[in-house]
Length: 177
Image (cartoon, rainbow, N blue to C red; front, side, top):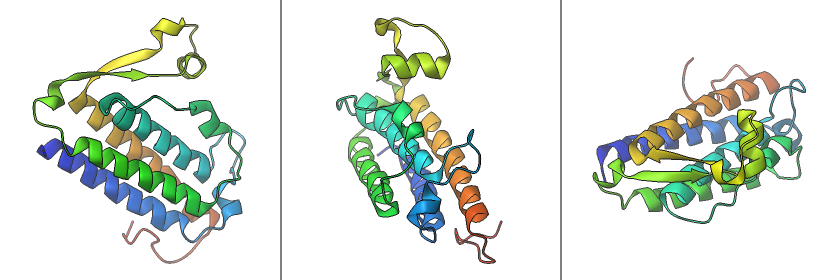
């Protein structure tokens, strides 16, 4: 396995561990609490991370079917327990590892197509694109960095929201901040 893939997976696994440690002390109601209407809940962010990882690593790189409802990730208001969210994140990671672990250095240079739902694409980019314009192409190495950075960004939000929702003197992620 190329070093880039090892490093990306190692970092994403650390972020996943931080997410799990951050949400474990919370009850299911707090997982879905929005601090403001304009903000996402921890549950929304977990669904979004799983959806993004699936779309980019499993679907685009692994050639699995594209089955993402990005808008639903942000519109969900509950009904999925903390345990179920953790399972979705871990299952997604497991599938990503299976796909990435067989890639070579040559594969990292290969370009893949990232598909989007038409409605999600237009809402996300605030455009009116046609159905045949709702995709992007990326070199796998670039996509890996992008997905890992995105994962870390939202993991940090989850840690902060968790600390805000349930104040504790301990460092819930095991790190001193």
